[in-house]
Image (cartoon, rainbow, N blue to C red; front, side, top):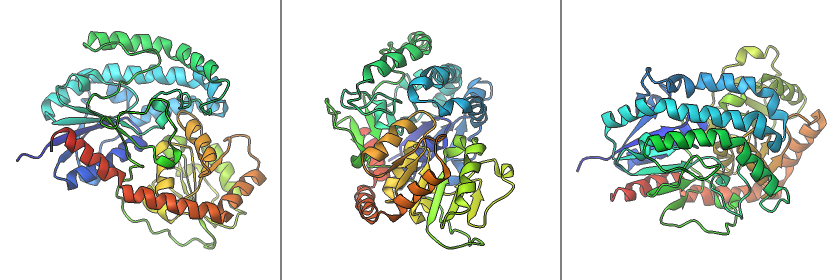
Length: 424
């Protein structure tokens, strides 16, 4: 029997990309041939894990629109907006972000369609927040992966997407109306594009439909919401997280090598905020712990590094998280799920998107602390770290959560679900 070819198309972010790697590793183990369609700037990322890559053609404008470099420039231009509350960010950040995402989908279409015809996959896995019509029109089953927060799929029992609110917040209606208003121009333009490509229009505020074949959600049980309208189990599979297999990281000895391990990562794009990370490093210098800090491509921005701090441009995150006693992150769903998967408390400082939703959810579920990224004092940061490190009951509970999630083996479950969709 010919091995099925499964094409992955993650968005231009390492969270989605590496989540897909975890599923691809399990698909390969179960007899499939995973390949990756990738934006410019991600060439080599998937090859390092042993997967064949197909880059969007250079002639496609999406090579610029969807690249890591383009998003870094976009984030840099919006750094000042990350100190705003989610409602204010709708105009300053969410609106222009959706404009850029729609541009990416439009410019990617021709090149993506060409690649799919060339590869002729048996199925396509889409980990993104927007539908690319070339995927819906490919004539093969496509799988939607929700690697953002569960709030991406609306329900009255689930908080509004990107709101950082509780589901029953009295201001919910106000936020939802403002979100529809902010996204309306991009949504109209996107629906025009969809119709041109033979797809039906989507309801206001929605840019990606439910797959009629299979939908995979990372949200583990401990942070899941009670939906008023349960998702059909034959189409929606909750994975209890989804973690890739990664190389072992052995923390190097530091000049001051005592105390618990605290890992800090705000993601590849959050690393751009060198001022925030620099402020935190100043606090770390006097705190009794060892700190491993992901600073992305900005190592040269830090001239004075304390003896209990190690800076790296890249860490094999699953390996460092499993050794950590505390994970400080931006609330990205991949990071949040990995913290839960390995039983590590989270200190969440969100700056945008679903980080707001996950930050509040960490507090609501007692799996971490949610702090505003710009209003903390050095003492407040120290107090938060001390509280999370010293809470024995919390660490015991996190251990039980980890045992449940690791036993579920979300990546393997995702792979099996995909193959069942193909009748394998």
